[in-house]
Image (cartoon, rainbow, N blue to C red; front, side):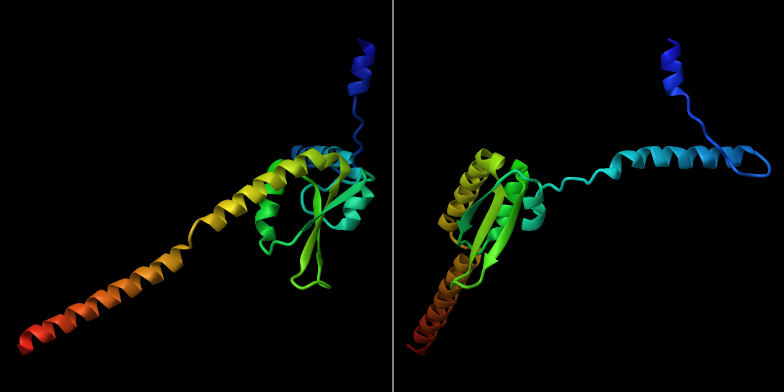
Length: 159
């Protein structure tokens, strides 16, 4: 019991002329803030999208997958959803440019499921026709029908 009390004891030294409630409150708040930041001395491990250098620092072993899709942002959303730590490098030497997605070796299963969801999403978008293209097609049809009506009215009136 005595040992628990000793472990919980905190020494707080304050330099000041007069100890008031406000001074004590400020000292305790500063002490609590310092205690909160004490655990942050160790470097924080980044998660999600990061640089290749940061990814390599984690010593987890890197793997990569080549992606040729221009819409890499949608992959980033899916990768964040699966909690994958990854880095994207654009290879400009090839036309069209390809992207290399680097990830940790232990994230191989998560990256596989993220890629399957990403490809399913892109295939679904490719199969669905564009709303703007449909709108243009229908506006052309409407314009053609209106001009046909006008021509027919002129013919009927001239008879």
